[in-house]
Length: 108
Image (cartoon, rainbow, N blue to C red; front, side, top):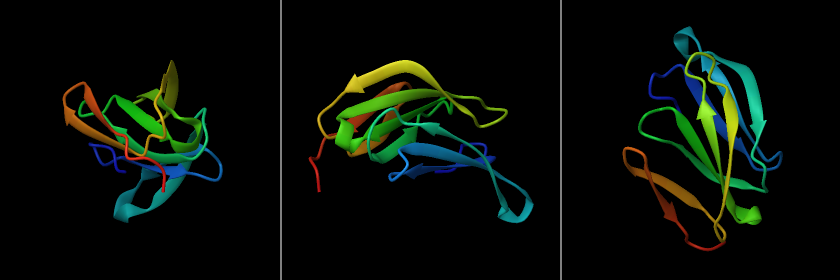
């Protein structure tokens, strides 16, 4: 997923249980910047809220969603201390500013 300002690309790593971010340079060249543990198992999906300030990650096998603040200058993710228990989350979809719709579709 690319940030709203097109400066960073975020990618989930299900085998490492992390979200990585890359700076997007001229010509689309990606440079690895960092990664943050999802505090769960198997980050199936994630989404950035409409403000571009928060990222939410579904941990499908850990039955929860973690919340992160995005540093708009560096792209870095900081866990905000919120882990929401949800059975087998698979999809996050932003509907309105500051509202998140949880798609609880069960496991594959």
